[in-house]
Image 1 (cartoon, rainbow over the protein chains, first blue to last red):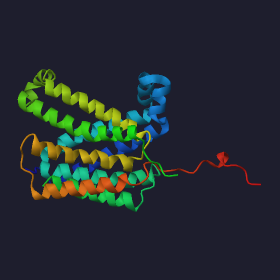
Image 2 (image 1 turned 90 degrees about the horizontal axis):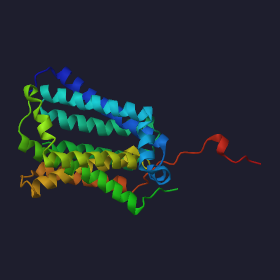
Image 3 (image 1 turned 90 degrees about the vertical axis):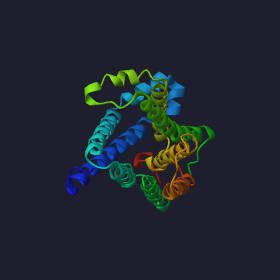
Length: 129
Length: 141
């Protein structure tokens, strides 16, 4: 069903993955800044925890990025086969998140986590077959 | 210091795994009852919102986002993400045992790889320990 050129196909799939990674990194960064939600809920209640989350501009940017990723995926699915678009964007998102978490969130992505990301990426691609 | 998780936090990760996959399955089941939605019949989406399967699916997906954010507040993104991938395994198993779909050898292999990937990361620390800022360090005599 692919209705666009190979370059356009990979451009749309890459956009889905990039915006998804941006959304995940911004959301995770916001939650790290806000702190342990269990402690906030114990101190300020559920309403206090919700206020802390939605009052974070970083979190809101993250959600916007996730929304852009979702609508880009919908567009991609209308012009590219789902059997290619879904696993390719999911796989690129997992690997992209591992790189971005290391460089932007300074997470300790050790050998164990790289192997895990590689296994999960390969597993997701096989599930789509 | 190795960050290990308490029982309650494992329950949150379990909620991350289950709510997304079961929520998607319920939404799919509900939308199959509602029928295809076209651009010219967007009003059908409002009717879909009254379907109990769709309502249950949306409720579970809200629960997923809440538990996902909670997990990210005390664990690394690279620790939580494989847990979300485990949801694909749950969907495949629901498809096999609830919807009686056939699962190919490729899919079983994919399930095995995801389980191994989640197992790898679950055995490690959940949170990266960052060194305290210079001003927080006790002064050396």
